[in-house]
Image (cartoon, rainbow, N blue to C red; front, side, top):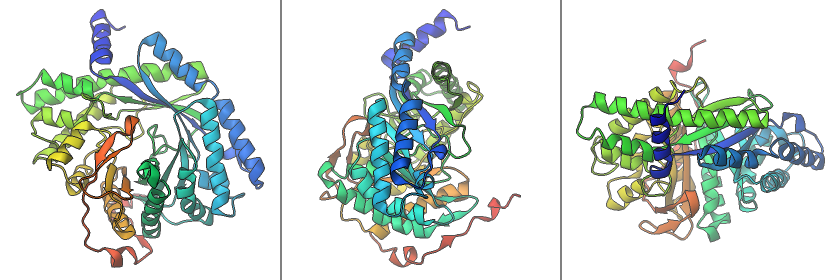
Length: 454
């Protein structure tokens, strides 16, 4: 049983240090909705989501009130739609009707995002996969709450460079479709290597085909809590530092475990996983970059940044896995630029570049995330950046991702305002030397030698 000191400590984390449960995400299988008739398919999808998730938002609010723990987002993830729509969708426009159905279901249930407008194409694309991918710009421009993710690589299969090339074009097209909102559609599109089936965070959440019919996954977040804890060991050795991070991650994860079990019980849906990720927000004091500075860096991006981030990520996982038997998703530390005021400050100061961010992704949870780049960036350049990040994930047997936002009409040095949790971002320069001949080769980069373990 928790003692009074632990209760007071947790209250302080919530009231003063921005501790929150970032999301309760209800995963829903749509496999039993498949129909060759598009109208019937859309009806099945809408009815299943609005039935299974009918009480999700109210349950989250009840838990928030009763336990005084902020539950910031309530979300839904569904089976990758390329699989669900394959029998009924003959054109990209057919897939867009499903995106609109998902949006209507999200609005009906009151969730802030619904993920799973997705395709898994790490080895090759089916006709349905390609139609869905080509529909993404229109789908994201014509919906409010739909998020899209495409898995183009894995350690076991290699990298599908045909899909990488296509997605460079799709990212730019999505930016163009939503240029009146500073190309905001790209903030709802993420490209993965080794995408997990149980990720509760957007825009990359989808409900994997190995999952149960419905599942509760919870993402916790506490960069501000970790930052405050490390202030107590300022100047101490690395051993002391690591112990403090582990202990703090344990406490943060226990809060998430409590919320997850309560949500599972009240909704009558099995508990899936806790995602341990330190997910920052634009709020002052809720920054992963601030943690890196507390460890001893003048700015994120300074020499030593990759080592500091590796230490942080590892200790968060070591502490978190002791607090829950079911840890999954992404888990570790996120480094989105626009969603982290410390990262924004580091970019503005000239301490943090796209290349340094790429190096940091070798040791953190996700990848190149929420990065605004010039709107006139070539599609092949975007594809090359995606390929580099996928290679890091493939070789290192980890999840990596890319969420780039080429902001139409903006150039390096301009600032882009996305609003809410998406924050704002300075437009960062990219390396404009050509990779056209590389991207245009086509085919698949083979899996690495260490993938052969059968």
